[in-house]
Length: 315
Image 1 (tube, rainbow, N blue to C red):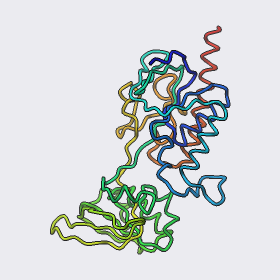
Image 2: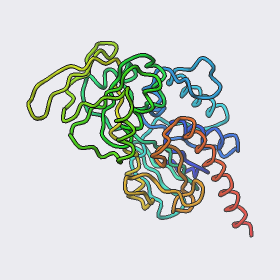
Image 3: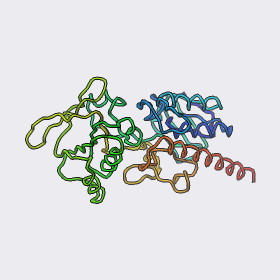
Image 4: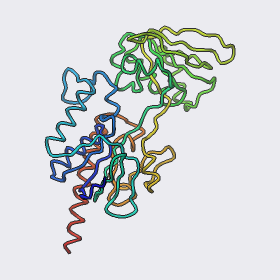
């Protein structure tokens, strides 16, 4: 099925960045189409309580926050389809975005596909996501006041997350699969000098213990094969993120060495008419509020871009 109507803007992604972009674009009467994916809502759909999003004094559940954003976008006239973008063609205008079901065309695009935290791939880890297993210390650290937690990783992110968690946790154990660390010397020393942080190195994580909450972490020594359980109540992954931008790279959108989409002017990419917002561009902050802010910026940039295009056609 081919959808021949040419949209003003297609927003690809439905996390805080994509839905905020949709809200702003819809209020500007651009009638955006949002390709929300088969599992709409982004990473906050796997989060229990969100306490750091402004306006919610007592916090709000992640799925509820995302549903509110989606309903708000619909209220202003955004069209939202639960379809995955599987390929794009930015070589000519109108731009073409293909899903499993149909083909969509648009004068402009906002890429807001986000980034996925890298996981260990353990069934127990996935079962306990949002129940003591997290990939964002800044988001969830507050919930671990007075508890013992583990941070998995050996780079700067792991050291930074561990140091941040000491504000709340009783004890933080950095668990790393090697003896050596990729972290910079200054970040490593900062963690080593913190009395709340200890290290367990050269081990592989076998299982996150517990049924409905984290009760321990089973690890195996990579040299001796000895297994032991670390008594913890929370586990934080700090082994990197993977931006969801492969189909855009294939279409000529410039990225950095890690695959994050580059911006050349505010939210504009190297391709005129293609914009970006949120974690697919942001390896540093990775917060719902910063993604939402960039979604707003992208929508405003699209509105200006389309107005300039209209002016050029008339002249």
